[in-house]
Amino acid sequence: MVWQRLSESEQARIWAGHAQGEPDRLIGRAIGRPEGTVQRFLQRRGGFAPLPQRRGSRTLSLQEREEISRGLSAQLSMRQIAKRLDRAPSSISREIRRHGGCQRYRALPADTQAWHNARRPKACLLARHAGLCQAVAEKLRQQWSPRQISGWLPKEFSADHSMRVSHETIYRTLFIQSRGALKKELLAHLRRGRTLRRSRTRPPVQQPQWLSEAISIRERPAEVEDRAVPGHWEGDLLLGSQRSQIATLVERHSRFVMLVKLPAHDSSSVVQALSKKILRLPQELRRSLTWDRGGELARHKEFSVATDVKVYFCDPHSPWQRGSNENTNGLLRQYFPKGTDLSVHSQSHLDMIARRLNERPRETLDFETPAATLARSVASTL
Image 1 (cartoon, helix red, strand yellow):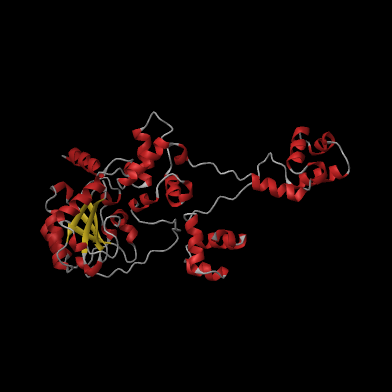
Image 2 (cartoon, helix red, strand yellow; image 1 turned 135 degrees about the vertical axis):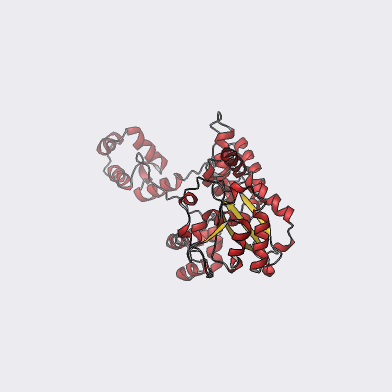
């Protein structure tokens, strides 16, 4: 096994580099190992660094074991040794009997063996609770995220406190297959398609373009910022192979999603398709649109004239300014992986995918669905 051939210092260096988001190639170069060795080592643990082992406050220390060894050499009784250490005589007796008896007891081998014996990993929560494991697996097959599942369980099983599990436990059980609870094929239902926990410190690569006569996001009204009023949207393009694209729209208040099939990638086609989609909405849901600085919306004035929706553009290198849309595009990669041709999907198929997202509970909505939140908001405004 590869992890047994790595020294403790090498393992520590791998975990430190992994936490900092270093590529596996550079980590391998730093410890003088092939990249594949680093990858297999991380894969075995699912990218989760093991918790450091700690000595219990009530267990014997190495210094106390040395005192026991000295006491035996001086032919002291167990009661005398126990009195020196302020321990119970029975504890000293068990310690000596456990590690070779009075004639063979040695402090360092006894401490090493005790440290090894203290490793008693218990089965994880999902392995011990079959009902909970079944509920989690069922929702994963429905392509719910672990965080959605952990938030949904207390609402669905409010009286059964055993039906509780954190999203981190679900991820650990999926990524560390040696836990033996959730099957490996469930990994395919995760949105990102990852099988390894990676560091979040890696900066995203963005290459935005400037637009002429763009209205800055800093000029948006205050009601857009606080998400209190429905009808303010964020938008961007989801890119595929062979220059195929899908327009994605997210309503800021409810996180309601709409997907638009684009016949071409030029600005005229994008504006026409977006206008057609937006005009199907009631007037109270057509207030503003915040877009990235992409040339596909260079004809934004035509869009505003056709829909009476003002367009605001993000600052350069600031995708976080339309964070709801960025997050949604990440969720959509579960259905539209990178490198696939997006032109093969019909508008009805896009509507079906959007409906799936809109009927999933969201943590930011206190695990209500975007569809229910938007319907309630529109009803209140009417």
